[in-house]
Image (cartoon, rainbow, N blue to C red; front, side, top):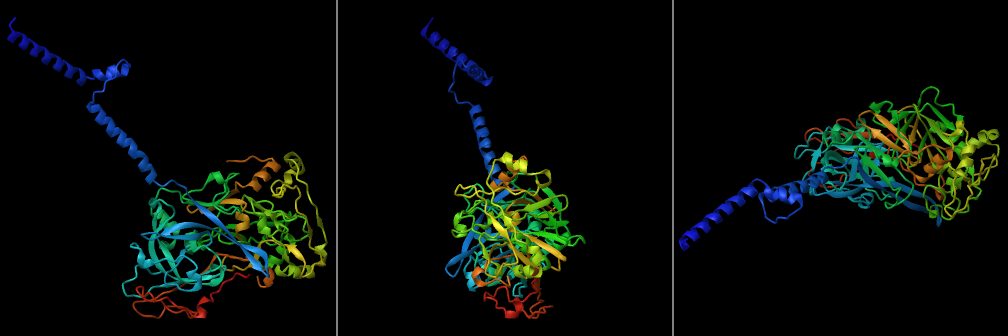
Amino acid sequence: MSIRHQAALRLILVSILVFASELFFEFGGASEIANDGDEVSMFQRPMIVSKSKKQKKSQKEPEKEAEKPIWPMLIPLEKESVPIVRNSRIVSHKTSFSGKIRVGSPSQDFKVVFDTGSGHIVVPSSQCTSETCLAHRRYNMTASSRSVPLNADGTLVPEGDLCDQVTIGYGTGEVMGELARDKVCLGADDSSCIETGIIMAVEMTEKPFKSFQFDGIFGLSLDALAVSPIFSFHNSFEAAKLGALPQFGIFLSAEAGLSSSQSSEIALGGYNPDRLLTPLKWVPVAHEELGHWMVTIKEVRIGNKTLNMCQDGSCRGVVDSGTSHLGVPTAYHSTFARAMSVLSDGNNGGSGGGLGLEADDTDGGEDCRGVEAPTLELVLEGFTVNIGPEFYMRSMPVKASSVRGLLSEIDANPKSAAPHKATTKKATSATTNKAATTAATKATATATKSSKSGGTKRAGGTALAPSVTSSSMVCAPKTLPMKLPALGQNVFILGEPLLNRYYTAYDWKQKAVGFGLSAIAENRKFLDEVGEDVVQTEDRKQDDEEEVYSFVQMTVQVVRVTGRGRKPQSRSNGAVPGRKCDDHTASSLDDEAFESPSHLEL
Protein backbone atom coordinates (compact mmCIF):
# COMPACT_ATOMS: atom_id res chain seq x y z
CA MET A 1 0.00 0.00 0.00
CA SER A 2 1.39 3.34 -1.02
CA ILE A 3 2.07 6.10 1.43
CA ARG A 4 -0.77 8.13 -0.11
CA HIS A 5 -3.24 5.27 0.50
CA GLN A 6 -2.05 4.87 4.09
CA ALA A 7 -2.59 8.55 4.81
CA ALA A 8 -6.07 8.44 3.32
CA LEU A 9 -6.94 5.39 5.44
CA ARG A 10 -5.73 7.09 8.64
CA LEU A 11 -7.87 10.11 7.80
CA ILE A 12 -10.94 7.89 7.38
CA LEU A 13 -10.32 6.13 10.70
CA VAL A 14 -9.91 9.42 12.56
CA SER A 15 -13.17 10.70 11.07
CA ILE A 16 -14.98 7.53 12.16
CA LEU A 17 -13.64 7.84 15.73
CA VAL A 18 -14.66 11.50 15.99
CA PHE A 19 -18.15 10.72 14.73
CA ALA A 20 -18.50 7.82 17.15
CA SER A 21 -17.36 9.98 20.04
CA GLU A 22 -19.96 12.63 19.24
CA LEU A 23 -22.70 10.00 19.12
CA PHE A 24 -21.51 8.59 22.44
CA PHE A 25 -21.77 11.89 24.31
CA GLU A 26 -24.95 12.95 22.55
CA PHE A 27 -26.89 9.92 23.80
CA GLY A 28 -25.60 10.17 27.35
CA GLY A 29 -22.92 7.50 27.38
CA ALA A 30 -20.64 9.56 29.62
CA SER A 31 -23.47 10.17 32.08
CA GLU A 32 -24.16 6.48 32.39
CA ILE A 33 -20.51 5.69 32.97
CA ALA A 34 -20.24 8.37 35.64
CA ASN A 35 -23.37 7.09 37.37
CA ASP A 36 -21.88 3.62 37.48
CA GLY A 37 -19.02 5.02 39.51
CA ASP A 38 -16.41 3.31 37.34
CA GLU A 39 -15.02 6.38 35.67
CA VAL A 40 -15.05 10.11 36.13
CA SER A 41 -15.28 12.36 33.12
CA MET A 42 -14.14 15.97 33.38
CA PHE A 43 -15.74 16.80 30.06
CA GLN A 44 -17.72 20.02 30.28
CA ARG A 45 -21.09 19.38 28.79
CA PRO A 46 -24.21 21.43 28.27
CA MET A 47 -25.68 19.61 31.29
CA ILE A 48 -23.31 21.58 33.47
CA VAL A 49 -24.78 24.79 32.17
CA SER A 50 -28.23 23.48 32.99
CA LYS A 51 -27.09 22.53 36.51
CA SER A 52 -25.74 26.02 36.90
CA LYS A 53 -29.21 27.35 36.19
CA LYS A 54 -30.68 25.03 38.78
CA GLN A 55 -28.13 26.18 41.33
CA LYS A 56 -28.98 29.78 40.66
CA LYS A 57 -32.63 28.96 41.09
CA SER A 58 -31.99 27.22 44.39
CA GLN A 59 -29.88 30.13 45.55
CA LYS A 60 -32.70 32.56 44.83
CA GLU A 61 -35.28 30.64 46.83
CA PRO A 62 -33.87 31.56 50.25
CA GLU A 63 -33.69 35.18 49.14
CA LYS A 64 -37.41 35.12 48.31
CA GLU A 65 -38.14 33.62 51.71
CA ALA A 66 -36.06 36.31 53.42
CA GLU A 67 -38.02 39.03 51.65
CA LYS A 68 -41.30 37.65 52.93
CA PRO A 69 -42.04 38.76 56.51
CA ILE A 70 -42.47 35.97 59.00
CA TRP A 71 -45.68 36.26 60.96
CA PRO A 72 -46.19 36.83 63.72
CA MET A 73 -43.54 39.51 63.82
CA LEU A 74 -41.97 39.72 67.27
CA ILE A 75 -40.93 43.16 68.50
CA PRO A 76 -38.93 43.26 71.76
CA LEU A 77 -40.24 45.57 74.47
CA GLU A 78 -37.82 47.14 76.88
CA LYS A 79 -38.84 47.75 80.45
CA GLU A 80 -37.58 51.07 81.73
CA SER A 81 -37.45 51.36 85.50
CA VAL A 82 -36.42 54.69 86.97
CA PRO A 83 -36.28 55.28 90.74
CA ILE A 84 -38.36 58.08 92.23
CA VAL A 85 -36.42 59.86 94.97
CA ARG A 86 -38.11 61.87 97.71
CA ASN A 87 -36.11 63.36 100.58
CA SER A 88 -32.96 61.46 99.55
CA ARG A 89 -34.69 58.05 99.58
CA ILE A 90 -36.19 55.91 96.86
CA VAL A 91 -39.92 55.71 97.46
CA SER A 92 -41.05 54.03 94.26
CA HIS A 93 -40.20 53.32 90.64
CA LYS A 94 -41.73 54.45 87.38
CA THR A 95 -41.82 51.83 84.68
CA SER A 96 -42.81 51.59 81.05
CA PHE A 97 -42.63 49.02 78.25
CA SER A 98 -41.66 50.34 74.83
CA GLY A 99 -40.51 49.05 71.45
CA LYS A 100 -39.05 50.48 68.27
CA ILE A 101 -40.81 51.53 65.08
CA ARG A 102 -39.70 53.48 62.00
CA VAL A 103 -41.66 56.28 60.38
CA GLY A 104 -41.13 57.99 57.05
CA SER A 105 -38.83 57.60 54.05
CA PRO A 106 -35.97 57.73 54.82
CA SER A 107 -36.99 56.23 58.11
CA GLN A 108 -36.96 58.02 61.46
CA ASP A 109 -36.68 55.83 64.57
CA PHE A 110 -38.96 56.08 67.59
CA LYS A 111 -39.62 54.22 70.83
CA VAL A 112 -43.33 53.83 71.50
CA VAL A 113 -45.65 52.27 74.04
CA PHE A 114 -47.85 49.71 72.27
CA ASP A 115 -51.14 50.65 73.84
CA THR A 116 -54.32 48.57 73.59
CA GLY A 117 -56.31 51.36 75.21
CA SER A 118 -55.97 54.03 72.52
CA GLY A 119 -56.55 54.31 68.79
CA HIS A 120 -53.78 56.43 67.22
CA ILE A 121 -50.09 56.41 66.42
CA VAL A 122 -48.68 59.52 68.10
CA VAL A 123 -45.13 60.86 67.78
CA PRO A 124 -43.73 64.27 68.77
CA SER A 125 -43.48 66.75 65.90
CA SER A 126 -40.28 68.58 65.02
CA GLN A 127 -42.41 71.72 65.24
CA CYS A 128 -42.95 71.15 68.96
CA THR A 129 -40.27 73.01 70.92
CA SER A 130 -41.50 72.54 74.47
CA GLU A 131 -39.22 70.90 77.03
CA THR A 132 -41.39 67.80 76.91
CA CYS A 133 -40.98 67.37 73.16
CA LEU A 134 -37.30 68.29 73.17
CA ALA A 135 -36.69 65.41 75.60
CA HIS A 136 -37.67 62.95 72.85
CA ARG A 137 -37.02 62.08 69.23
CA ARG A 138 -39.22 64.26 67.02
CA TYR A 139 -40.80 63.47 63.67
CA ASN A 140 -39.81 65.73 60.78
CA MET A 141 -42.59 65.63 58.22
CA THR A 142 -40.65 67.58 55.60
CA ALA A 143 -37.77 65.08 55.73
CA SER A 144 -40.01 62.23 54.53
CA SER A 145 -40.73 61.87 50.82
CA ARG A 146 -43.83 59.80 51.60
CA SER A 147 -45.48 62.15 54.09
CA VAL A 148 -48.80 63.79 53.14
CA PRO A 149 -50.85 66.14 55.37
CA LEU A 150 -54.38 64.94 56.08
CA ASN A 151 -57.57 66.26 57.54
CA ALA A 152 -59.23 64.38 60.37
CA ASP A 153 -61.60 62.66 57.93
CA GLY A 154 -58.63 61.24 56.01
CA THR A 155 -58.86 63.60 53.02
CA LEU A 156 -55.80 65.42 51.67
CA VAL A 157 -55.22 68.98 52.82
CA PRO A 158 -55.20 71.30 49.76
CA GLU A 159 -52.03 73.33 49.42
CA GLY A 160 -52.26 76.54 51.41
CA ASP A 161 -55.27 75.42 53.45
CA LEU A 162 -55.36 75.08 57.20
CA CYS A 163 -54.62 71.76 58.89
CA ASP A 164 -57.14 70.08 61.15
CA GLN A 165 -55.96 69.68 64.71
CA VAL A 166 -56.93 66.95 67.13
CA THR A 167 -56.65 66.82 70.91
CA ILE A 168 -56.49 63.38 72.50
CA GLY A 169 -57.14 63.04 76.21
CA TYR A 170 -55.64 60.00 77.95
CA GLY A 171 -56.16 58.70 81.46
CA THR A 172 -53.15 60.80 82.41
CA GLY A 173 -52.09 63.58 80.09
CA GLU A 174 -53.08 64.99 76.72
CA VAL A 175 -51.56 65.58 73.31
CA MET A 176 -52.58 68.08 70.67
CA GLY A 177 -51.43 67.45 67.14
CA GLU A 178 -51.84 67.60 63.42
CA LEU A 179 -52.44 64.72 61.07
CA ALA A 180 -50.51 63.09 58.24
CA ARG A 181 -50.11 59.88 56.30
CA ASP A 182 -46.70 58.23 56.06
CA LYS A 183 -44.91 54.91 55.92
CA VAL A 184 -44.72 53.10 59.26
CA CYS A 185 -42.44 50.07 59.65
CA LEU A 186 -42.82 47.55 62.45
CA GLY A 187 -39.51 45.75 62.12
CA ALA A 188 -36.17 45.86 60.34
CA ASP A 189 -37.67 44.36 57.17
CA ASP A 190 -39.19 46.96 54.82
CA SER A 191 -41.75 44.41 53.63
CA SER A 192 -43.52 44.89 56.98
CA CYS A 193 -44.14 48.59 56.31
CA ILE A 194 -47.62 50.01 55.79
CA GLU A 195 -49.11 53.36 54.84
CA THR A 196 -51.18 54.70 57.72
CA GLY A 197 -52.28 57.88 59.44
CA ILE A 198 -50.28 59.35 62.31
CA ILE A 199 -50.71 62.19 64.79
CA MET A 200 -47.82 64.70 64.90
CA ALA A 201 -47.93 66.08 68.44
CA VAL A 202 -47.29 69.82 68.58
CA GLU A 203 -48.19 69.96 72.28
CA MET A 204 -47.69 67.27 74.95
CA THR A 205 -48.44 67.67 78.63
CA GLU A 206 -45.43 67.45 80.90
CA LYS A 207 -47.03 64.66 82.90
CA PRO A 208 -46.53 61.89 82.10
CA PHE A 209 -44.63 62.33 78.82
CA LYS A 210 -41.61 64.30 80.01
CA SER A 211 -40.69 61.82 82.74
CA PHE A 212 -40.56 58.76 80.47
CA GLN A 213 -37.97 57.81 77.90
CA PHE A 214 -40.32 56.56 75.20
CA ASP A 215 -41.23 59.01 72.45
CA GLY A 216 -44.83 58.27 71.56
CA ILE A 217 -47.81 55.96 71.64
CA PHE A 218 -48.82 53.21 69.21
CA GLY A 219 -52.57 52.71 69.58
CA LEU A 220 -53.90 49.17 69.03
CA SER A 221 -57.56 49.56 69.95
CA LEU A 222 -60.57 48.64 67.85
CA ASP A 223 -61.35 50.92 64.92
CA ALA A 224 -64.01 52.96 66.72
CA LEU A 225 -61.46 54.93 68.78
CA ALA A 226 -59.73 56.38 65.71
CA VAL A 227 -60.90 59.72 64.31
CA SER A 228 -61.26 58.06 60.88
CA PRO A 229 -60.35 54.68 59.32
CA ILE A 230 -56.96 55.79 57.94
CA PHE A 231 -55.78 56.48 61.50
CA SER A 232 -56.68 53.00 62.74
CA PHE A 233 -53.61 50.76 62.64
CA HIS A 234 -55.80 47.67 62.28
CA ASN A 235 -57.61 49.11 59.27
CA SER A 236 -54.34 50.06 57.54
CA PHE A 237 -52.70 46.76 58.48
CA GLU A 238 -55.56 44.78 56.95
CA ALA A 239 -55.66 46.97 53.82
CA ALA A 240 -51.94 46.31 53.20
CA LYS A 241 -52.71 42.59 52.64
CA LEU A 242 -49.42 41.39 54.13
CA GLY A 243 -50.71 37.85 54.63
CA ALA A 244 -50.77 38.17 58.41
CA LEU A 245 -53.54 37.20 60.81
CA PRO A 246 -55.67 40.05 62.23
CA GLN A 247 -54.26 39.41 65.69
CA PHE A 248 -51.56 40.52 68.08
CA GLY A 249 -50.29 39.29 71.43
CA ILE A 250 -48.58 40.97 74.38
CA PHE A 251 -46.11 39.48 76.85
CA LEU A 252 -45.08 41.78 79.69
CA SER A 253 -42.40 40.55 82.05
CA ALA A 254 -41.24 42.25 85.23
CA GLU A 255 -37.65 41.59 84.19
CA ALA A 256 -35.83 44.61 82.83
CA GLY A 257 -33.73 44.73 79.68
CA LEU A 258 -33.86 42.86 76.38
CA SER A 259 -31.27 40.12 77.00
CA SER A 260 -33.33 38.03 79.39
CA SER A 261 -35.21 34.95 78.21
CA GLN A 262 -38.25 36.52 79.86
CA SER A 263 -37.90 39.87 78.11
CA SER A 264 -41.17 41.47 77.09
CA GLU A 265 -42.45 41.49 73.52
CA ILE A 266 -45.39 42.22 71.28
CA ALA A 267 -46.34 39.84 68.47
CA LEU A 268 -48.06 41.42 65.44
CA GLY A 269 -49.90 39.40 62.81
CA GLY A 270 -50.64 36.58 65.26
CA TYR A 271 -49.48 35.65 68.76
CA ASN A 272 -46.48 33.77 70.15
CA PRO A 273 -47.46 30.38 71.69
CA ASP A 274 -43.94 30.02 73.13
CA ARG A 275 -44.88 32.66 75.71
CA LEU A 276 -47.83 30.61 77.01
CA LEU A 277 -47.97 27.98 79.75
CA THR A 278 -51.69 27.28 79.36
CA PRO A 279 -54.01 27.43 76.33
CA LEU A 280 -55.67 30.74 75.54
CA LYS A 281 -59.20 31.23 76.82
CA TRP A 282 -61.02 33.58 74.48
CA VAL A 283 -63.47 36.10 75.92
CA PRO A 284 -65.76 38.14 73.63
CA VAL A 285 -65.45 41.91 73.53
CA ALA A 286 -68.36 43.75 75.14
CA HIS A 287 -69.77 46.76 73.29
CA GLU A 288 -67.28 46.76 70.45
CA GLU A 289 -68.83 49.97 69.17
CA LEU A 290 -67.05 51.77 72.03
CA GLY A 291 -63.67 50.84 70.54
CA HIS A 292 -62.03 49.29 73.62
CA TRP A 293 -60.84 45.75 74.29
CA MET A 294 -63.49 45.58 77.00
CA VAL A 295 -64.80 42.36 78.55
CA THR A 296 -67.75 41.65 80.82
CA ILE A 297 -66.94 40.98 84.49
CA LYS A 298 -69.59 38.81 86.13
CA GLU A 299 -68.15 38.73 89.64
CA VAL A 300 -65.34 40.29 91.64
CA ARG A 301 -63.87 38.38 94.58
CA ILE A 302 -61.18 39.35 97.07
CA GLY A 303 -59.90 36.46 99.15
CA ASN A 304 -62.84 34.25 98.04
CA LYS A 305 -65.32 36.89 99.21
CA THR A 306 -67.68 38.11 96.49
CA LEU A 307 -68.24 41.86 96.39
CA ASN A 308 -71.74 43.18 95.98
CA MET A 309 -71.13 45.28 92.88
CA CYS A 310 -71.71 43.25 89.70
CA GLN A 311 -75.13 41.65 90.23
CA ASP A 312 -76.77 44.24 87.98
CA GLY A 313 -74.43 43.42 85.08
CA SER A 314 -72.67 46.79 85.20
CA CYS A 315 -69.09 45.50 85.68
CA ARG A 316 -66.68 45.56 82.76
CA GLY A 317 -62.92 45.60 82.35
CA VAL A 318 -60.80 47.35 79.72
CA VAL A 319 -57.62 45.39 78.99
CA ASP A 320 -55.03 48.15 78.66
CA SER A 321 -51.31 47.65 78.13
CA GLY A 322 -50.79 51.39 78.55
CA THR A 323 -51.86 51.61 82.20
CA SER A 324 -49.40 50.89 85.00
CA HIS A 325 -52.01 50.07 87.70
CA LEU A 326 -55.38 48.39 88.15
CA GLY A 327 -58.11 50.94 87.67
CA VAL A 328 -60.98 50.45 90.14
CA PRO A 329 -64.39 52.19 90.10
CA THR A 330 -64.11 55.18 92.42
CA ALA A 331 -67.12 54.19 94.52
CA TYR A 332 -65.42 50.91 95.48
CA HIS A 333 -61.78 51.93 95.63
CA SER A 334 -61.62 52.24 99.41
CA THR A 335 -63.06 48.71 99.69
CA PHE A 336 -60.27 47.37 97.48
CA ALA A 337 -57.58 49.36 99.28
CA ARG A 338 -58.78 48.14 102.66
CA ALA A 339 -59.11 44.47 101.68
CA MET A 340 -55.82 44.21 99.78
CA SER A 341 -53.50 46.22 102.06
CA VAL A 342 -51.51 44.84 105.01
CA LEU A 343 -49.36 46.46 107.67
CA SER A 344 -45.68 46.25 106.93
CA ASP A 345 -43.62 44.29 109.46
CA GLY A 346 -40.26 44.04 107.68
CA ASN A 347 -40.03 40.24 107.70
CA ASN A 348 -38.61 40.10 104.20
CA GLY A 349 -35.25 41.48 105.24
CA GLY A 350 -34.62 43.35 102.01
CA SER A 351 -34.63 40.37 99.67
CA GLY A 352 -36.00 41.16 96.27
CA GLY A 353 -38.21 38.12 95.85
CA GLY A 354 -40.06 36.83 92.84
CA LEU A 355 -40.87 37.97 89.32
CA GLY A 356 -37.22 38.38 88.41
CA LEU A 357 -37.04 41.75 90.14
CA GLU A 358 -33.75 42.99 91.43
CA ALA A 359 -33.23 43.58 95.14
CA ASP A 360 -32.33 47.17 94.26
CA ASP A 361 -35.99 47.74 93.36
CA THR A 362 -36.78 47.74 97.06
CA ASP A 363 -33.95 50.09 98.10
CA GLY A 364 -32.69 47.43 100.49
CA GLY A 365 -35.95 47.34 102.44
CA GLU A 366 -39.01 45.16 102.61
CA ASP A 367 -40.39 43.85 99.32
CA CYS A 368 -44.16 44.04 99.57
CA ARG A 369 -44.60 41.69 96.63
CA GLY A 370 -43.81 38.85 99.01
CA VAL A 371 -46.44 39.52 101.68
CA GLU A 372 -49.39 37.30 102.52
CA ALA A 373 -52.45 39.02 101.09
CA PRO A 374 -55.70 37.91 99.44
CA THR A 375 -56.02 36.98 95.78
CA LEU A 376 -58.10 39.19 93.52
CA GLU A 377 -60.42 37.21 91.23
CA LEU A 378 -62.30 38.57 88.23
CA VAL A 379 -64.91 36.18 86.83
CA LEU A 380 -65.23 36.74 83.08
CA GLU A 381 -67.38 34.91 80.54
CA GLY A 382 -66.10 31.33 80.75
CA PHE A 383 -62.83 32.22 82.45
CA THR A 384 -61.56 33.57 85.78
CA VAL A 385 -58.39 35.61 86.16
CA ASN A 386 -56.55 35.52 89.47
CA ILE A 387 -54.01 38.12 90.56
CA GLY A 388 -51.98 37.58 93.72
CA PRO A 389 -49.99 40.12 95.78
CA GLU A 390 -46.77 39.26 93.94
CA PHE A 391 -48.38 40.89 90.90
CA TYR A 392 -50.60 43.67 92.30
CA MET A 393 -48.58 44.99 95.27
CA ARG A 394 -46.40 48.08 95.12
CA SER A 395 -42.81 47.02 95.65
CA MET A 396 -42.22 49.15 98.75
CA PRO A 397 -44.22 50.04 101.88
CA VAL A 398 -45.90 53.45 101.89
CA LYS A 399 -47.52 55.59 104.55
CA ALA A 400 -51.16 54.76 105.16
CA SER A 401 -52.04 58.39 104.52
CA SER A 402 -50.86 58.06 100.92
CA VAL A 403 -53.36 55.30 100.08
CA ARG A 404 -56.57 56.95 98.98
CA GLY A 405 -59.59 55.99 101.10
CA LEU A 406 -57.68 53.64 103.38
CA LEU A 407 -57.98 55.52 106.70
CA SER A 408 -61.54 56.70 106.08
CA GLU A 409 -62.61 53.13 105.46
CA ILE A 410 -61.11 51.98 108.77
CA ASP A 411 -62.77 54.84 110.66
CA ALA A 412 -66.12 54.00 109.11
CA ASN A 413 -65.91 50.23 109.67
CA PRO A 414 -63.79 49.56 112.79
CA LYS A 415 -65.31 46.14 113.38
CA SER A 416 -64.31 44.94 109.93
CA ALA A 417 -60.70 45.82 110.67
CA ALA A 418 -60.02 43.19 113.30
CA PRO A 419 -56.26 42.54 113.49
CA HIS A 420 -54.99 39.39 111.87
CA LYS A 421 -51.41 38.22 111.82
CA ALA A 422 -50.37 36.84 108.45
CA THR A 423 -48.29 33.75 108.99
CA THR A 424 -44.81 33.28 107.64
CA LYS A 425 -44.62 30.16 105.50
CA LYS A 426 -41.73 27.88 104.84
CA ALA A 427 -41.15 26.89 101.23
CA THR A 428 -41.97 23.21 100.88
CA SER A 429 -41.88 20.61 98.17
CA ALA A 430 -44.38 20.66 95.36
CA THR A 431 -45.96 17.49 96.76
CA THR A 432 -46.66 19.10 100.14
CA ASN A 433 -48.09 22.22 98.52
CA LYS A 434 -50.27 20.16 96.23
CA ALA A 435 -51.67 18.19 99.13
CA ALA A 436 -52.48 21.40 100.96
CA THR A 437 -54.27 22.85 97.95
CA THR A 438 -57.80 21.60 97.62
CA ALA A 439 -59.71 21.31 94.36
CA ALA A 440 -61.84 24.26 95.37
CA THR A 441 -58.85 26.59 95.71
CA LYS A 442 -56.67 25.42 92.82
CA ALA A 443 -57.71 28.30 90.64
CA THR A 444 -56.85 30.91 93.27
CA ALA A 445 -53.80 29.47 95.00
CA THR A 446 -50.69 31.59 94.62
CA ALA A 447 -47.17 30.31 94.44
CA THR A 448 -45.05 30.35 97.58
CA LYS A 449 -42.30 32.89 97.07
CA SER A 450 -38.67 32.47 98.03
CA SER A 451 -36.15 35.26 98.25
CA LYS A 452 -33.39 35.76 95.71
CA SER A 453 -30.84 35.41 98.46
CA GLY A 454 -31.76 31.73 98.74
CA GLY A 455 -33.84 32.00 101.91
CA THR A 456 -37.12 30.15 102.35
CA LYS A 457 -39.23 32.75 104.14
CA ARG A 458 -42.27 34.30 102.59
CA ALA A 459 -42.82 37.80 103.86
CA GLY A 460 -45.38 38.21 106.55
CA GLY A 461 -47.68 41.11 107.24
CA THR A 462 -50.51 42.14 109.52
CA ALA A 463 -53.99 42.91 108.28
CA LEU A 464 -55.05 46.48 108.95
CA ALA A 465 -56.41 47.23 112.42
CA PRO A 466 -58.36 50.21 113.78
CA SER A 467 -55.16 51.39 115.44
CA VAL A 468 -53.47 52.13 112.12
CA THR A 469 -52.49 55.78 111.81
CA SER A 470 -51.57 58.07 108.96
CA SER A 471 -47.88 57.42 109.64
CA SER A 472 -48.25 53.62 109.69
CA MET A 473 -46.29 51.88 106.94
CA VAL A 474 -48.43 49.58 104.83
CA CYS A 475 -48.03 47.33 101.81
CA ALA A 476 -50.67 48.64 99.43
CA PRO A 477 -51.96 47.46 96.04
CA LYS A 478 -51.25 49.23 92.76
CA THR A 479 -54.79 50.48 92.29
CA LEU A 480 -56.19 53.83 91.23
CA PRO A 481 -59.75 55.12 91.49
CA MET A 482 -61.41 56.14 88.27
CA LYS A 483 -64.70 57.06 86.66
CA LEU A 484 -65.50 56.13 83.08
CA PRO A 485 -69.18 57.02 82.65
CA ALA A 486 -68.96 56.81 78.85
CA LEU A 487 -68.06 53.12 79.15
CA GLY A 488 -70.34 52.10 82.00
CA GLN A 489 -71.07 52.38 85.69
CA ASN A 490 -68.47 49.98 87.12
CA VAL A 491 -65.52 49.84 84.73
CA PHE A 492 -62.10 48.47 85.67
CA ILE A 493 -58.85 49.12 83.83
CA LEU A 494 -56.91 45.86 83.64
CA GLY A 495 -53.36 47.16 83.38
CA GLU A 496 -49.86 45.88 84.10
CA PRO A 497 -50.64 43.88 87.28
CA LEU A 498 -52.87 41.59 85.21
CA LEU A 499 -50.63 41.63 82.13
CA ASN A 500 -47.59 40.69 84.21
CA ARG A 501 -49.27 37.38 84.94
CA TYR A 502 -51.31 36.69 81.80
CA TYR A 503 -50.29 36.59 78.18
CA THR A 504 -53.05 38.34 76.27
CA ALA A 505 -53.97 37.95 72.60
CA TYR A 506 -56.31 40.21 70.66
CA ASP A 507 -58.36 39.27 67.60
CA TRP A 508 -59.59 42.20 65.52
CA LYS A 509 -61.79 40.00 63.31
CA GLN A 510 -63.47 37.90 65.99
CA LYS A 511 -63.55 40.81 68.48
CA ALA A 512 -62.20 38.73 71.34
CA VAL A 513 -59.41 38.79 73.94
CA GLY A 514 -57.48 35.63 74.83
CA PHE A 515 -55.96 34.98 78.28
CA GLY A 516 -53.34 32.40 79.20
CA LEU A 517 -50.72 32.12 81.95
CA SER A 518 -47.47 33.72 80.80
CA ALA A 519 -44.32 31.63 80.58
CA ILE A 520 -42.64 33.21 83.61
CA ALA A 521 -40.98 31.59 86.60
CA GLU A 522 -43.76 32.48 89.06
CA ASN A 523 -46.42 30.82 86.91
CA ARG A 524 -44.29 27.72 86.34
CA LYS A 525 -43.89 27.38 90.11
CA PHE A 526 -47.62 27.88 90.60
CA LEU A 527 -48.57 25.18 88.09
CA ASP A 528 -46.04 22.80 89.59
CA GLU A 529 -47.50 23.27 93.06
CA VAL A 530 -51.13 22.80 92.04
CA GLY A 531 -50.19 19.84 89.85
CA GLU A 532 -51.35 21.22 86.52
CA ASP A 533 -49.67 20.51 83.19
CA VAL A 534 -47.77 23.12 81.22
CA VAL A 535 -48.50 23.70 77.56
CA GLN A 536 -45.66 24.88 75.43
CA THR A 537 -53.68 60.31 93.76
CA GLU A 538 -55.37 63.31 95.44
CA ASP A 539 -54.57 62.29 98.98
CA ARG A 540 -50.98 61.22 98.38
CA LYS A 541 -48.23 62.91 100.32
CA GLN A 542 -45.25 64.07 98.33
CA ASP A 543 -42.73 61.90 100.13
CA ASP A 544 -44.65 58.75 99.15
CA GLU A 545 -45.76 59.84 95.71
CA GLU A 546 -45.45 57.19 92.98
CA GLU A 547 -45.45 57.46 89.23
CA VAL A 548 -48.83 56.47 87.80
CA TYR A 549 -49.70 56.60 84.14
CA SER A 550 -52.64 55.57 82.01
CA PHE A 551 -52.88 55.95 78.25
CA VAL A 552 -56.44 54.67 78.00
CA GLN A 553 -58.04 57.03 75.52
CA MET A 554 -60.64 59.20 77.20
CA THR A 555 -61.56 61.96 74.75
CA VAL A 556 -60.90 63.01 71.17
CA GLN A 557 -61.69 66.55 70.07
CA VAL A 558 -61.17 67.72 66.50
CA VAL A 559 -60.79 71.31 65.33
CA ARG A 560 -62.34 71.27 61.86
CA VAL A 561 -61.60 74.13 59.49
CA THR A 562 -63.28 74.96 56.18
CA GLY A 563 -61.60 76.53 53.17
CA ARG A 564 -59.12 79.18 54.23
CA GLY A 565 -61.15 80.41 57.16
CA ARG A 566 -59.81 80.28 60.70
CA LYS A 567 -63.02 79.62 62.60
CA PRO A 568 -63.65 76.00 63.67
CA GLN A 569 -67.10 74.57 63.07
CA SER A 570 -67.62 73.69 66.72
CA ARG A 571 -65.36 74.06 69.71
CA SER A 572 -66.59 74.76 73.21
CA ASN A 573 -63.32 75.00 75.10
CA GLY A 574 -61.69 77.87 73.25
CA ALA A 575 -58.78 76.08 71.55
CA VAL A 576 -57.05 77.99 68.81
CA PRO A 577 -57.89 76.87 65.26
CA GLY A 578 -55.55 75.15 62.87
CA ARG A 579 -52.62 76.67 61.03
CA LYS A 580 -51.45 76.37 57.46
CA CYS A 581 -49.78 73.03 56.79
CA ASP A 582 -46.81 74.75 55.16
CA ASP A 583 -46.42 77.08 58.13
CA HIS A 584 -43.63 75.63 60.28
CA THR A 585 -44.25 77.91 63.23
CA ALA A 586 -45.14 75.81 66.25
CA SER A 587 -48.75 76.07 67.35
CA SER A 588 -49.51 77.60 70.72
CA LEU A 589 -52.47 76.70 72.88
CA ASP A 590 -54.07 78.70 75.62
CA ASP A 591 -54.53 77.00 78.98
CA GLU A 592 -58.18 76.27 78.34
CA ALA A 593 -57.33 73.96 75.47
CA PHE A 594 -55.95 71.41 77.92
CA GLU A 595 -59.01 71.20 80.13
CA SER A 596 -60.88 68.39 78.42
CA PRO A 597 -63.34 66.32 80.48
CA SER A 598 -60.99 63.60 81.70
CA HIS A 599 -62.77 61.25 84.09
CA LEU A 600 -59.72 59.63 85.65
CA GLU A 601 -59.09 60.50 89.28
CA LEU A 602 -55.58 60.06 90.64
